[in-house]
Length: 115
Image (cartoon, rainbow, N blue to C red):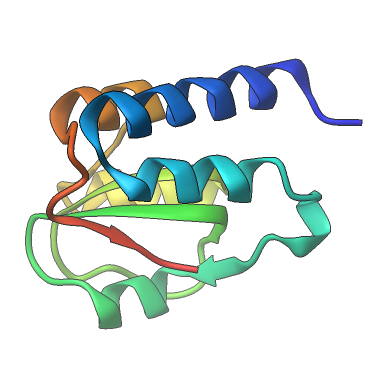
C-alpha cells in the first residue's frame, strides 16, 4: 500500500510536469509510485563524485551517509539518513522538499537526477 503523502507528491509532480513541460517531474512521479524495494540507495561519496559545486541533485531513493560531499549541493530525495543530512548541511549545502525544488526549477533545467 502506498502512503497517501507519496501519492499526493506524485500527483503534484505530474501536474508540474504538464504545466511546465518538464519530463523530469513525470519521471520522478513514476519513481515515487514504485515499491520502496525497487528504489536505489546512494551514498554521499558517490554523490560527491558525480556532482560539482552548487549543483541541484534529486535522488529518487534513499541517501546514505557513507563518505562525504566535498562541496555545496542542494539535495532533494525521497528519504535521507540523519548522518547524510548532517554532512550535507555541515558542508554548506541544503536540503529542500519537492515543492521547493519545483518552485526553484520549474522546467527542471540544471537538476541532476541520480539513482
